[in-house]
Length: 220
Image 1: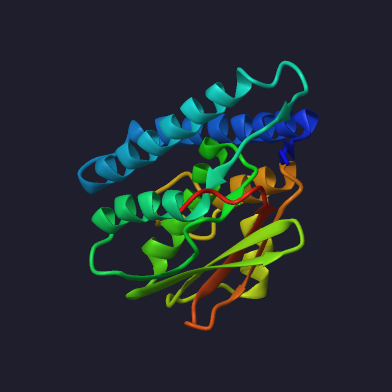
Image 2 (image 1 turned 120 degrees about the horizontal axis):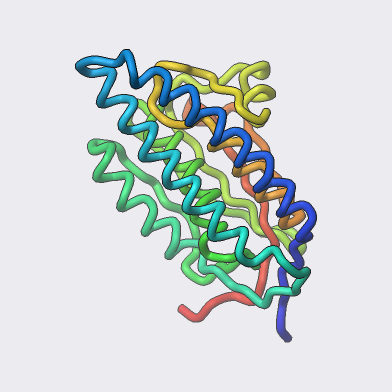
C-alpha cells in the first residue's frame, strides 16, 4: 500500500505570498535600523538578517514547485529528523536536557524540508525559552501522528498563544529572530491538512502539538 500526502497548492502559494510580505517588511525595518546601529545592536541586527536570508532561501525554493498541483508520495522519518535538529540546537543552547520519547519507525507524509521547517521552529523556541529541560513525545491516532514538544520555560498566556500564529506578530521584540516562526509552522501544517495546537506543558512551560499525516512506517 502506497500512502500519499496531498498538499493543496493554492494554500501553499498563499502561505508563501503572506510570508514574503512579512519578510520584506522585516527587511525594510532592519535596514533602516542598521543605519543607526552601533556596538551590540549591530551584532543583533546581523543575526536577524541571517535568519531572514534563511527564510528567503527557503521560500524561493518552495516557489519552484508550486507551478502545478501534484500528489506527492513522500515519507519523512520523524525521530531521525528530530534527533538531527536537536543536535544542532544543543550546540547553540548548551546545558539543556532533552527527553526524546519518539519511536524510531514513525514516518509522516510531509516533505523533509517542510518537516524540518516546522519542527525546527518549534524546537528553536523550546531550546531558547526552556530553563533546562525539554520533552519530545509522539502519539498516533487514526491517520495522524502528533509530535508534542514541551519545555520548562515561562510558557505563554492564552492571549499570547492566540497572537503567536498571527502574521508578523512578535511576542518579544528583544529576542533575535524574524518573529515569523510559529506562524510558518501553523500555515505549513494546515497546508498538509494538519494542525498546530499550543498550551501549557506538564513541565511548566509551553507545549506545542504538531499533527501531521501518517504514512507507512520506516524500517528500523
